Structures are given as C-alpha cells and as structure tokens.
Length: 408
Image (tube, rainbow, N blue to C red; front, side, top):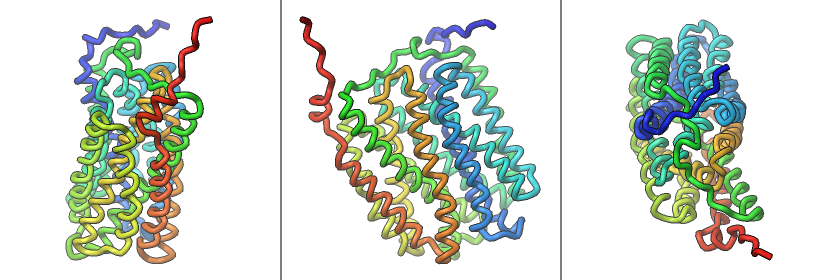
C-alpha cells in the first residue's frame, strides 16, 4: 500500500481549505435539522402524533455522538481528508435514502445513518480548522456562523420544498448537494494535510489540577449546552406552529420565521469568536453562560411577537456558547490529539442531546405545551452558569502553568 505523503501547504491554500470546511459545517447542521421541520408534515403523512414521530429521530441523535470518537480516532490515525470525503458522500447518500423511505421505521434507519456520517464533521473538521489559525476564536466563530446558517437554511429549505414539492424533496435535494460538495472537496484538496505541514496552535500549558478543573467546567457546559441546543432546535418549529398561528399558515411560513430567528442569532458566533481573540476566555464565557437560564425561563411564558424576540435572544446565547467550548479545546488540548479531544467533547454534547428528544416529547405530551420544557432547560442552563463562575482568569492560568525543573 502506498503511504500517504503530506502535501506542501502551497498545494492547498488555507483560505480554500477553511471555506470548504465551513461549507461542510453548514451541510452538517442542515442535514441534521431537516427533520424537525419535516416532521410537521410527516406526522400528517404517517397519521401519527408529533410527540410519537419525534422519537424516531433518537437513533440519529445517538449516532451523532457515539460515532464522534471513532471518527476522531480515524482522522488522527488514518486521514482527515479521507474522513471528510466519507462525510460528504455518506451524508449525501443517507439524505437521499431518507427521501425515498415509505414508513416510519425506514425513516428512522435513514435518520440514524445521517447521524453516523454527520458525526464525522466536528472532531475532524474542527481539528483541521484549529491547525494553523493565529486567531482561533474568529476562525471557530466564522465556522460556527456557517453551522448555524445550516440550521436556518434547513428550516427554510425544508419548509419551502415541502410546501412547493413534497417532504421527499426536502431530503433528496440537500443529499445531491452534499455529494456535489464531496466531489469539490476531492478536487480542491487533492492531498492529505498533515499537522506537521502547517503551523499548529500550541496548547496552553496548565498543571494537572487546573487541567482537571477546566475539563470539569467544559464537561458541565458541554452536557448542558448539548441538551439545550438539541431541545431548542428540535422544538422551535413546533413552538412556532402552536403559538404563532396567525403568522404561520404553512410549513413554509414556519420555516421562514424559524430561519429568520436562526440567521440573526447565528451572528452570535462571529461576535463571540472575535471577542475570544481580544479578551480573556473567562470574560466572554461568563455573560454568555449566565444569560441563558433567565431567558429560557421567560420564554416559557411568551407568546406572539414577544415569543419571536425571546426566541432570538435564547438562540443568540445558545449559539454563542458553542465557540467558547470549542476554543477551550483548541487552547488546552495538544495538537496531535486535538481531533480526539473534539470527539470527546461532542460525545458528551450529543450524548446529552440524545436525552433531549424523549424529554421534550414526554413533557409536551404530558402538558400539551412547552412551558415545562423551558423550565427544565433553564435549570440546566443555571448549572452551566454556575460552572462558568469557576473558570480561571488569565492570572490564575499563569500561576497554574507547570514550572520548569531547575537543573541540578
């Protein structure tokens, strides 16, 4: 077998690679957020309640987390370029398969496959992005912006195609686009990009005690953030359908409103990413983490136009948390196993996400609304905010840096 050799950096411009990785993030979140809008129509097609059919997405959500670690391991040990090609072609095929299903069970299998291939992006794509950026906060912020635009476009594309053609087109059209992007990546990134071929961002050294503290904070905010992110993105189309009936007469109307909220809120990642490069991580982390609990709590009692405003505020804070957690990994995980560190983070995130779907479905079925859902989410957000209070500032990190051993 011929060994893969690292290509000179001149062969693939960093800007070209980053744009392709950003578009990959857009596709990743678009693919995994089609179902929350499509389920509004699919519930009628299959003659099922929304609460029942929502549970069929559980396999995909579990796979999204469970397959992150093997994807990160393969990216580090085999080929990050190869894994990105598997991502594009695999998720494209799984989307097309979802559009061709004819029963809820078949759809559940297809959604699980979407989750399997979607799991590749975060550990592999983010590790490639963090390889040579001197402004890692802005780089991750821009990447996050693309990901959230994917969520927004999923609402718009799904609502539009379902209304104009059918729910099947809402899966098949993005699937064909993903395959086309795979060929583009294969053409424009013809060689493997090794960490050694680019200037890696060095990890900030801390002693073992501080490392454990940062990991505990990251784990807490990651688990809470994963639960909140999935619960809100899965629920928002249904929340709008139930509470904004005068403005959402069709899946297209719902898709437009959800997309509008997500597009505006997505700017949070760009703003937060830029702030991370200019200020200490703690000073950016605290306000974003502490804002989420009260906003989620108030959202449970909102309606009409106030619901739109509060939904934007909630999603702004939820989206803004993502580059903060990713920056923790980029700054404190050594470059040679950063893909596995991202994989571990997203296993925790998407593992928590897997509990979000049955929780939302059960609470909605029990109470016929989303007030209790947002109360529970506010409690998790409060835990995240408390954890953020213990994140060290610059002076504490400097004091916790390992001291070189004196020569005897």
